[in-house]
Length: 445
Image (tube, rainbow, N blue to C red):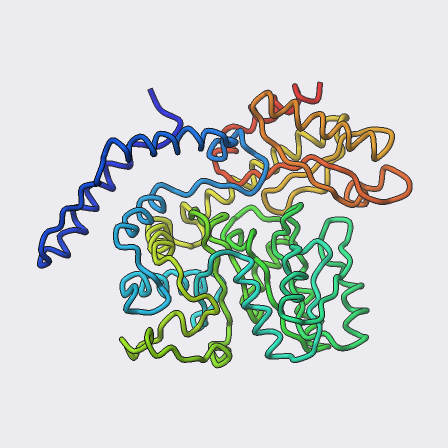
């Protein structure tokens, strides 16, 4: 009988550990047995009990927040590296894992069309975006950072930390940056960087990058692409025309952030920042007399703001990209297309049910809909009721507070409404879409 959690792959880890150990045969043997196996077993069982107090993030019936289980190859490679616990700050702390990080990041840069670049992994998208905006502030001192009202809130917070002026640009009814509003702000002057979001975290909308690039020709500014959530979707083969056009122009921006721990099948935390112009490395230049002496090669700590970073994250990413190359038409790309197909299936179900009011067709894999009711208060209360009933039935959704304009303004007075939200970022969601639709329909009955 098949289990719900993968345990068979642990046998592969045992074999890989034996192969790893062969590389250290010249060393004197060590007693590596645990001091008290019984105590270790007891604590591990306590951990397992505590971890049962979680939603089933790994299962397709969890369709709420952006939580995707790492692939077995990522889990195993990460665990294998932990027997050494390399540190990718300096080469003497992680020679092999540093090389693997450079290779993995180069694969990501090539996915965006860059053969030359400067980049590295980070602890997540927030730190990656901080580095991108830090460079933007140094490149255009005193100029403002602007992003869509639907961009991630981290950009405003980061700008405050960096003491950079930040302004929000209104979004249109599909959650994308309003280009007319952006141009009005650009005409007023003083904008140094425009953040284009390719995959907003609320509704998965994709900012119109071609229009932003056209405005750059007239007004001159840096373009930073926050692709933390949606960056891999450039590989998918079933994007609608506007999203496809945006992803096809990513090679023209100045910097890109992507989170392999979202769609890249990695454990938390694994973010990545890449710059088109390697010359921005001059802004990172510093010295560390006790860590950078071991090699004349570039240490990753010399091109990042973070110091100690887990080499295991790089090993896991490298292994995953070896198994699933980042190419159009490959297995990895196919899985992304399946996620969007699942989202389209759920959207069609919601749109055909007169109990719901959907946001427009999903651009990626996030589906959002409101409960049809006489007022925003009634709709919000109904959404919370459906959310709770679905959870009891085993279907885990999410809630989002969104502008009523996203739903065609069915209520007078504007404002916001609490809507239901589903993130279908597991390829298994496509195979289970009828089950998800059925549970949603029952919960709304």
